[in-house]
Image (cartoon, rainbow, N blue to C red):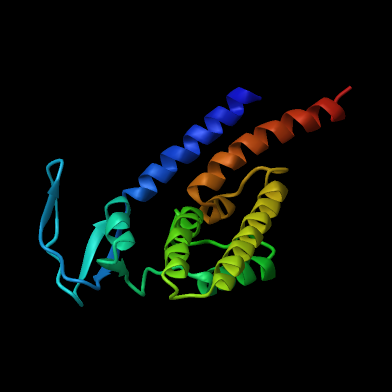
Amino acid sequence: MEKVESQLNDSLNRINFMFMNEELTIECIKSFKKFSFLGESFGPFEKGNKYRLKLFSAIPFIENNIIKVASNEKCDNIDVQRFAIDERDDQKLIFRENNYFLYKIKKFRIFLEKDIKDKIKPPLDLDRYNSYMSNIIDSRLSKLLRLAKAKLSLDDERRLTSSEIILFRHLYKFIKVWRKFYLTH
């Protein structure tokens, strides 16, 4: 079982790495001169302008109040609440345009935590965010378990995120073996 856990964890970390290398739109909130680090250049950033930057590169600038995630890319407790309600109200897995949807809500929590630390948002927003995120994960997991009892249709497969596909494959295999054990003589 440790091998399966290790393989699953490795796969999830690889997907997280790919997500961290995705570009997002950021908006400069404080002008910043050009900066080079390990052969990579960042900036210059001018206050009010929007740029595209890989998430892993953007995080230090966000933490230092130089840039912020553009409003079209944000994912706060209100967005997560909307996603949770959508998942709760639909019996099927909901297709998300962003294949890294679950990673996004997981990683963007750090931006909300920063806003709370900077007293921009109240701590209650983080409690709500965590609660809605838990509802999304539990709802999608429940739907995934139902799907794992049968062969996955192409339509259902399109609705899965990258990490859910990996989990589904493991679940499908385990459920198939477990059911066969009890249903054969």
